[in-house]
Image 1 (cartoon, rainbow, N blue to C red):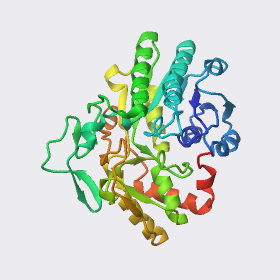
Image 2: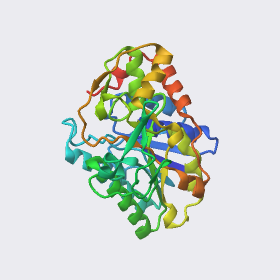
Image 3: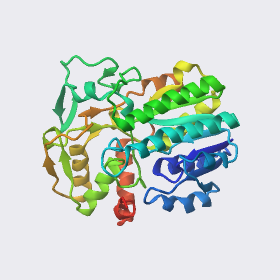
Image 4: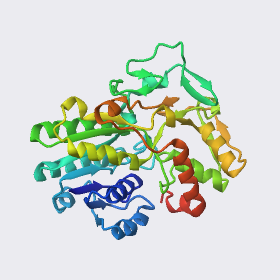
Amino acid sequence: MKILVSGICGFVGSTIARSLVESGKGHELLGFDNFSRPGSETNRASLKAMGVKVVHADLRMASDMDALPPADWVIDAAANPSVLAGVDGTTGSRQLVENNLGGTVNLLEYCQRHRAGFVLLSTSRVYSIPPLAGLAVEAVDHAFRPAPDATLPAGLTAAGLDETFATAAPVSLYGATKLASEALALEYGETFGFPVFVNRCGVLAGAGQFGRPDQGIFAYWVNSYLRGRPLKYIGFGGHGHQVRDCLHPRDFVPLLEKQFARPDVSSTNRLINVSGGAASARSLRQLSDWCAGRFGAHAVTADPEPRRFDIPWMVLDSAKAARVWSWQPQTSAEAILDEIAVHAEAHPGWLELSAPL
């Protein structure tokens, strides 16, 4: 099977590509990247050594997509993944839309032309912010969780948010580009008769993830803690109790294989949450405690002022993925953190390598 991966030299794209090659299924991997992300060049040589063809192309350029050879499936792993994109002063709102939404349209046109299946890696950030920001929570073991006596919004339980949770605005400009991409992908598939799957992800994490706090908080925190870099708990009283789940991208591969094998699945099962779930959820304070046990003490400062778009507790419920696809994550949060720590110890300049230009 020929598989095209967009953003193949990013952390997620490169991890999925390597795992597909290592699966032994005989897949032919092709990928492209515009190498705009600092550090992405480091993945090119290792991918090519595995037999993966890597070319330079810009997702935003339709002519670049026209020049790509046919594939059976496209995995869209190229996006600006920061919820602050478009409003943080480093990325323009038009750039965000052109990359995350316009780029998806270019890939969908490619799929229409070549009759290729399409897998969109989406995000938990398509879910509506106000009900999550206003969620009644309590702190237990230095981490928030939904208050047991609270009336929870529809689609949310202690296990996390399921796919029925509200997606009404506001979801941030970033979330809106991904939500619009989801809708267009599903419509393209229905209109032009090619299979489409939308996999909404929690926080993706693992060794080799680039160290940016707005995009890879687990890798950034572990690397920064090890180096004695300044770290800060922002918002929610400055206690670091805000919680996110985590998933290793290689755990996607068994799910992708099942989706490739069942392209005619019903439309109701084409959109699912894919995450590490409540078992993988950690607060920043718990992450610091883990680092202290591994590396020793390091002071973390506090800034109680809230930050735009932040929420106290974001955990995805992947029960539908388990029910429909018999899928569950294989890599524990402990194993993910250990893997990041080993990589950080072996690469002392990693934060500088992947820092913004």
